[in-house]
Amino acid sequence: RAAGPPPLVGAAARPRPPRRSLSFCCRRPPSPAMRERTPPPPPRPPLEGELPRGEVSVPPPEGEAALSECLRDLKRTLEGGSVFVIGRGRRYPVRDPAKSRGDVSREACEEAFDELSRAIGFELLAQAAASHAASRAEAAFGG
Image (cartoon, rainbow, N blue to C red; front, side):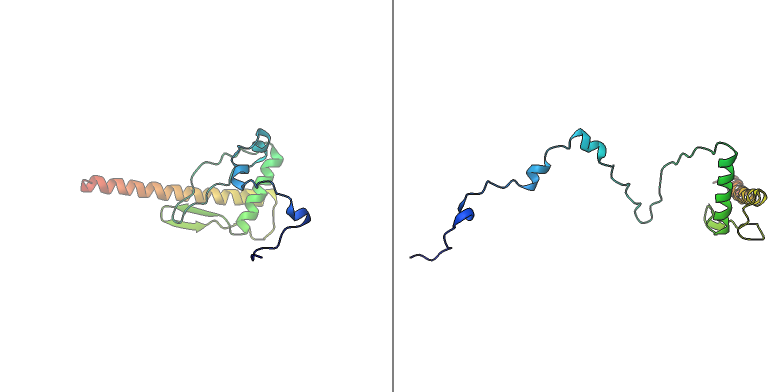
């Protein structure tokens, strides 16, 4: 008798249908219903040294209640130290001008908005002055 595997008995002796490979199943395009349910892939994160790009369109608040909510959110964000003005070669925080933390009265919220407006205005003036100085230097030195 030749050595080899033992003979198959019972259910194991029945021939099996050929297996389909996974690539066969995945070659068909997804159905329209499946395409609707499949979310788009997430955006690629920026590479090291690459700045994010794009636009964000945010509608302005409509109504007094929505505006008050936005001002309260700004006030709380300023209190937390999470607001910065970023210019050419510099970054500085915008501080909450309120004396007491947690005050979200209308007056405190408007003071916070005014402080942010002042900080942005100072940065715009600094950029304009630097641009003006650079153009004067260019004109004086023939650059």
